[in-house]
Image (tube, rainbow over all chains, first blue to last red):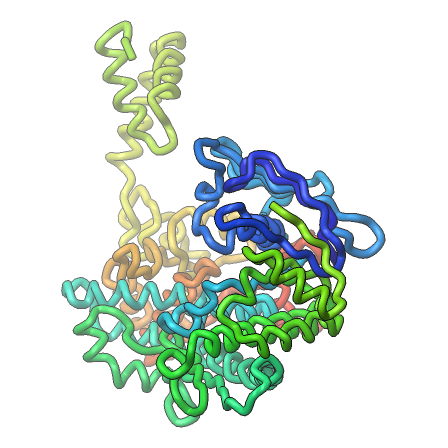
Length: 359
Length: 201
């Protein structure tokens, strides 16, 4: 699968632009603010139906405009697929595949997978547990429909439980109702915790392999799933233990919605004890593991979008990344760099063909 | 908007209080009434007043009724050993139209949802328990929406009734009759496979 052509209209800083890409490695170079990352985001948008950087669709209009379109032709199988995504104030978001509009845009997600590696990924290591849960939940939801369903069920029941806790505080409902929600939450909670634990194990070996390769060193990294639930503590007993605390706080203080994934280097937390380059290597390895798991599952090599990947890495790690890219493990790759001569030199020296796009 | 008369304006104000009716539709309805014979409007007004003043709720099952007990509860041909629990009165009409049920009903008046501030005390649950406590009832059917809130309500009821000798059943969930398999949503289809039944001719 590869993206052959992309047309942008009023998308972020682009008024009108057309790009053609090679099925292999595409280098996107230009000055700061030229729109390199925006171009990657347009590709991401076409695959995932949303921006990787903006929470609302409106935020992607070119300044002063009220609509944008992204059009692309993807070579996949025998017939090229034409995608047309538009967002306007009047009609909202419309996505057409070969001129036929989707009734639910979300049905498109996963058909043309892509993996984006950006400098923002370091937030995975630095910020709170929510981002790490979302990283793993997103992959799990793509792999397993039942997981998605159970996660939605858990979250909805949790909202009800939290409302109940507030109403108990206002003396509008009885404490005994908590038991009903504890028992209802138990089954999705145990399912999610088990799936996360199983998946982490599978993910870990792929991740470690990637990290070892990029870092080219004896650094010992680890990734562990940490849950409030375990073999000896059931969800219902956990809720019973925390009942008085929950009643005082008026929300559910523990549960699988507070689980975390612990990132460590040489036995210490990555957040505090790793350099920026090590943190970056760690998150790149996470994304590459995501790439591999998606490839295994779907049989399609996702588009790989690399935003400013060489920044903060030492020469040795850059060489290892180059080795990975020349190995034919990836399909189509998009790579941005504000220093064209660096990218050109790296690829020409290694004899890896690269299609340069200057913007 | 400028109305031709104060009386039209008043009528529009009242009609537009109804759900789903805005000022424009209300005006059209008011003007329609003016075009018809006088009798047309007086009959409508009478019907509305009677509806409001002469209907009440059944003391036993909380269904809409003209007397203390609704026509279903007072029908002695109905099977008194079985009660079908529903959320609202329209659900009874739907089940009655199937012609497959001859027992009694019980209207809860909603489902448990703390987000909307509805707890068990806001529903007709205690009266259901006292109906069961008489010992006459052998089975209750939970005919509650297949939503998360519906599941919670059913779960609550089953716990509340566990000390009584009554069989608790719930409606089957699965493929709609006459539907095609490929268009069925995955969750329903998945459940239908798990809860499959022995084939009977």
